[in-house]
Amino acid sequence: MEQEVFAVCQFVLRSKNVNILALETTDRTGSVAVAHDGEVLLEIGLAEDVRSAQSLAPGIRDLLARVAWQPADVDLVAVTVGPGSFTGLRIGVATAKAFAYAVGAEVLGIDTHEALALPCPPEVSRLHTVVDAQRGQVAARRFRRGDSRDLTPQGCSELTDLDAWLASLPSGASVTGPMLSRIASRIPANVDTLAAELWRPRAGNVARLAYRQHRAGRRDDLWRRVPVYTRLSAAEEKARHHGG
Image (cartoon, rainbow, N blue to C red; front, side, top):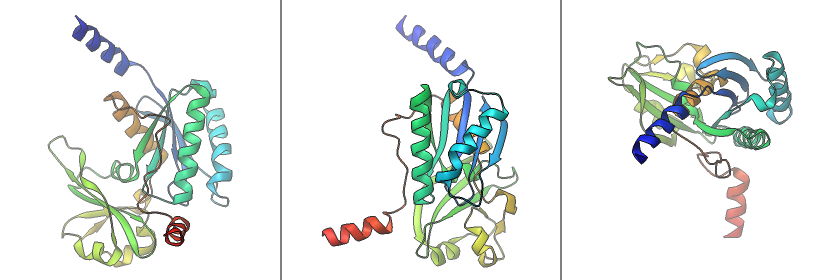
């Protein structure tokens, strides 16, 4: 009986309509989106001439107003948690947690690489995503399209030297990621580069991934959800060095 009750509860939980607010602030140009279940209703880019700290809250306000939502209408706040800009990640995650706490919504962190892989064309079977990690290094991840036809991560995000990553790209694979805006000309001739409009993670794709993962039963603890950094910041490394 207990198993039957649990199964019914899970069905109800996964069948519930979910209003999603998605935040993407991992790079210089961020975006926000709202979705009802897996359907993105609206996505807007944040102002490019100011930092996310100044543009994110007004962007959320304008976004909700344009779809006639009140903050309390949001059931789930999805946010990219890394890799990405230290400042952008902190602002995005802190805002997501504060908003979710204020309205009683859930929060779900989304991997930047997975957000980059989601819009990849179906004919691509092997994808490499790349994010700038500063100091001549990148955060990279590999994906392969399996029997489900979805791109599946092959291992975790890896911090590596840019030159080593470029040399490791296999013939016939495809690449995407915001780092390409600076290194596209260095990609080997036998490796395909996705269209430039797919190089940056978008809040709409963050919302779509959040819906899939939430429906599959994934949950994050609001109090423990933190950004996923590839390394300590320069200030933190300096403080650790002097402290040692």
